Image 1 (tube, rainbow, N blue to C red):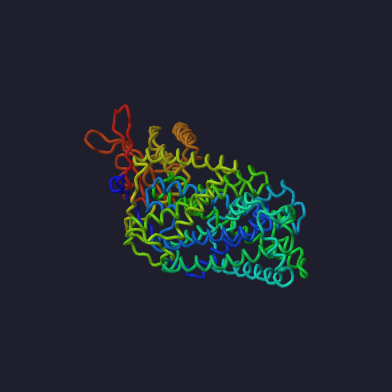
Image 2 (cartoon, rainbow, N blue to C red):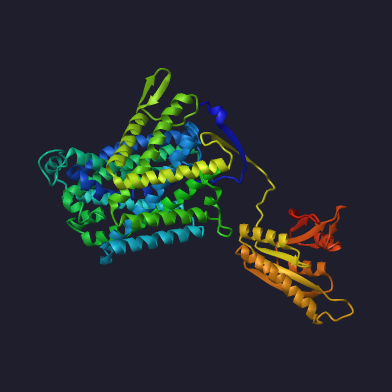
Length: 636
């Protein structure tokens, strides 16, 4: 298919981009804070299958992660936009392949929220024993996810300084555990004896089948590379800083993870690690240290809970950012990333992903393997797309500027193909196939997730009159004087009870902006009478008219305030009320005669347009028309 024939253009207002304030250290801190949290739950489920060979499984998974990090580093240096694998696939292929990568990645983020939140309970059980029980753990997890939604709903923002602080504490604690364990616990002869695979030793030696399953599980230990890619839009000189931060995180992570796994299996045997300490393996290491186990045990429990909470939050933020990126390219409906009128947070997407994470936790019934299988389904598919995008772009666009280039390339005809990208693609796709074939939970839920997503994607693209296989090129246009209108208080004057379309228009605007609506009826009192003279008949008519307006408001689920005031002149009463009570929009109706003049309010409309201190929307309707058509015009 000729890609040029399937490219379609859409324009959007350029509202600016994120401030580029993050340097290499900031990116490393954010990335390692997310990446470094995975060992707190991944080590136990890896040891469950790989037994004493868990360090080898983590090392092999680490090599795959290194290949993945190199592919991300090169692509992020080429494409400085957020979106991660979804953006890379869009540039290499089309919006459909990009959607598959992004949708899989959204599943990855949702499971990251679930598995990180769930793992907090076992570490806090050091202080509160009942948190070892599944019901308590699941209950606490639900509360944690709800708290994350509330925090992000109100627009709370993390800081690089806090990430630095937490990363420093985490790294120092992990290195202390490795040093103490290496000196007092690790015995080299026993270590090599326990690393064997496929021998007659049911305690330490796994079968080859179990070893490869454990290696697939070990992939969960390297969650978080996407969180660094998503920050490209906020990085200083992203073509240089993002790859450097990724390489730094990759090197540090491999050293720490392999070191901790060696210490762990020198401290306790795999059966104990994968049963008693399945959900809190680091606590298992600390419990057998020759000194300071109680003090360090409490410290590790508290620090792990904080780091895992931050990782859960990163997953929620990453999901909302990715959905925003996909929404801009017409891959998910726009309402998914609708901003809250007050807090400016993407509250719809935050709510959706929080609810999905809670559902996944409940469906797991407290099984970490369930969550790990589901994570691998989404993450491996997204990582495979990243590797494939790199290889394809090396072939299709070899001339593109690449400030960072993955090493170890082979020459094929006139192209330089990355060995790390090819090996990483094979490994991640093989792991994904392994999950699909051998893991029923990951297979059924993962395929259901993809199926629902694709149905939504095809329906939405058809509704937008866009080709599903095409690529939407978004052109952002700068409009210097553009400011999004924001209405909080809307006033609708009524007269004669014929303003049905006008009240409807006001309610529609109120629904969009979350505004309050006030329906007003002005009773004109002749100058021959005192202003406070009770005019009973007119008051009854006014109340009847306002009740009609109130009934219309209920159809839109809009609570409407009703006001009746006496005045000498309608226009003066309306403009005075607008100024006094700070209404920011006035919606009025009038009828156009055949001669093109306004009927109904007559000169009142002109005087209000001249003196109103807020925008005025006029809803015109043609006289004697069976279908009245409202056409709003705005005047300030």
